[in-house]
Image 1 (cartoon, rainbow, N blue to C red):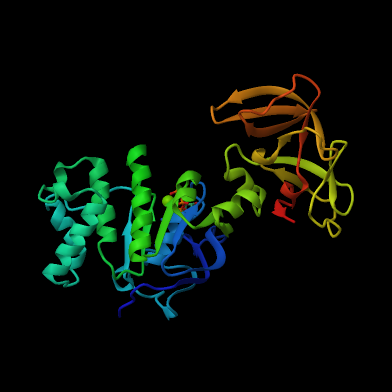
Image 2: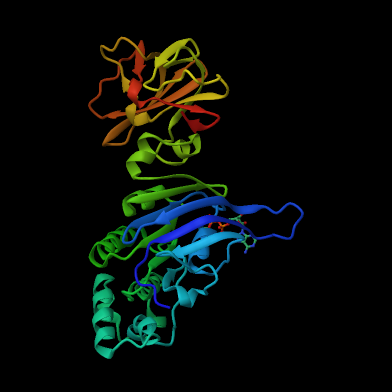
Length: 361
Ligand SMILES: Nc1ncnc2c1ncn2[C@@H]1O[C@H](COP(=O)(O)OP(=O)(O)OP(=O)(O)O)[C@@H](O)[C@H]1O
Ligand SMILES: [Mg+2]
């Protein structure tokens, strides 16, 4: 069966590695999701949250305990990896050391009986993109760890007929400068060939700079799928607010004050959220440090603080302020004047997110 580029659907998938235990633990809790053809996805989350499990379920290395995988509507759940037309790139290079770089890159195509001309064309294109052209005749074992991983990547990218290229932390062994360039290259490849790329990482910067859709995972759950902007401005859970962004989102325990305002200690903070249905249980107010301003002439949503420290990062300053036992971080322009006393911080209402039991209201 051939499945050229496809929409990939994960339908009611869940997975446990110990199904026969009395109380099996789930590496993935039930979820459904679709990956559109030709887009770039990043799966982002801390170690052990289930990223590799999800990827391996799509490629066929792991059979899910429950649910189905569909490629363009065809059920592939019981097909092995080779039958799924998926290219997978792992954290560490998987190459044939004795073969030349050319033969390594050509291998996935040779296995599938592509013509010699087609193979040459594809190997040339991919090796140009990955800057491996001058090494094509060398045995792969003579290359550095970085370059070997480029070969692995190239082997994933050389086929034009794959449903998707799945990459599991593929740039871990690569030095930071090269990493940046490679992410750009991957984006170009995606734009040029419209290959669906799925990229697993625990590094938010990698995810943000690479993907147009980010899937954030935590402890076997998909907690948010969205654009970098969505994750930044409206984190759906306090975990996303905490995990994404640097520094993490400011989060304060809070009480209801009215239908659209909350109280932090004794300070009333208006929000743009309708809070009338809340029960006042376990509420938190979240605001990004980027949105916390040093007040000028605002008349509400002000917090009187003591500045604890000011760190100059060159292009911005990071204020750490205290109000009672609370710590508030504010990222301000380097030109911002910071008064020496009676400092007030301003929380714009439209930037305030309210969380009930860790979920965005
Ligand atoms: N082969 C396995 N057998 C048993 N448990 C496993 C196996 N593989 C993973 N797990 C468990 O499943 C959970 C999810 O693991 P997974 O490898 O998918 O996480 P991950 O997000 O890829 O982590 P990392 O960032 O460290 O690679 C973890 O609790 C892990 O210990
Ligand atoms: Mg992993």
